[in-house]
Image 1 (cartoon, rainbow, N blue to C red):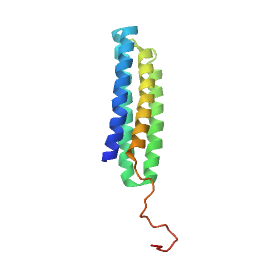
Image 2 (image 1 turned 60 degrees about the vertical axis):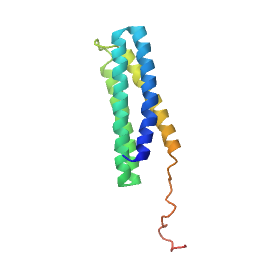
Image 3 (image 1 turned 30 degrees about the vertical axis):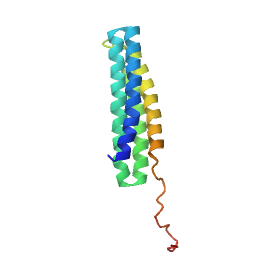
Image 4 (image 1 turned 180 degrees about the vertical axis):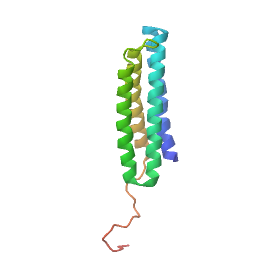
Length: 141
């Protein structure tokens, strides 16, 4: 991973961990140990999925900008589908509170996304290569 990607990852992980701790506390107060377990599982699923997605996009960015976009779209779609499948699969679980899992996953996803967006904005990466030659034009320097 590049240094910018690590900064973006930190910018998403830290607020998600704080929000996850708050959700775990609320789930514990409302549903006891099973609520806490559900919230922890939701937090771990979100952190794992989104970290894998960011690593995949980071790796694809070294190949080409087009591959980076494809990786971003594919990982996003896979994350959404898998999280939806997990929410459906765990709706009748008895080992932990499914509602705590669901709320934890939703809240942590929103916080992660906001933190990631903030991290990307603060990196101030160039999105245009100022030294690149434009195809079809002669060298105008």
